[in-house]
Length: 194
Image 1 (cartoon, rainbow, N blue to C red):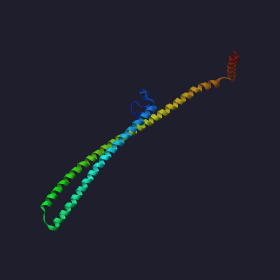
Image 2 (cartoon, rainbow, N blue to C red):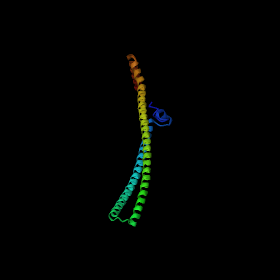
Image 3 (cartoon, rainbow, N blue to C red):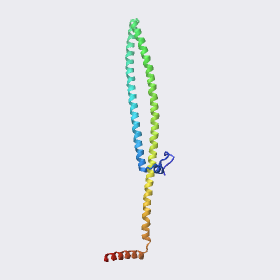
Image 4 (cartoon, rainbow, N blue to C red):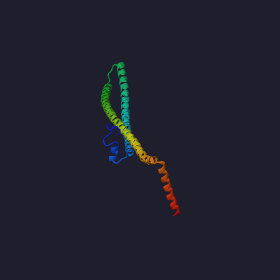
């Protein structure tokens, strides 16, 4: 029997038989389960990747907006440095830009934290799925080993059933073989005559 410590309860040849499944059916069932797990894993991974790309695009857009506003503020600062006058409109614009920049910075910081939490959660889930996949692979291999052993035992049993007939023939003496042949031959000739 395979490594029963690695296999979940009820698995193995005896578990298959108690549940009414043959080892080959159990392997097929495990293979289907593995494919479903792999598909689910890839679908979830693709969705999360798409969400992260959208978030990254939003962050890039916000960064471009901030860069534009920063250049605009630098031009205003240069103009102030050249003229020495503080423009009221310039001051209000700078205050508004500063407030927007702070708001965007805080929002980006929160989004970054959320993305980091999602990434950590996704990595944990991926690791769990990898472990489950490994366990299913181990169980599948154990079941395949059991199936091979059962096939070998079946072949040995068939061979041992055939062996007694050939041993009986080998154990007969040549005179018994002749008697058997002549008795079957004479009985067949009697049948032909009648």
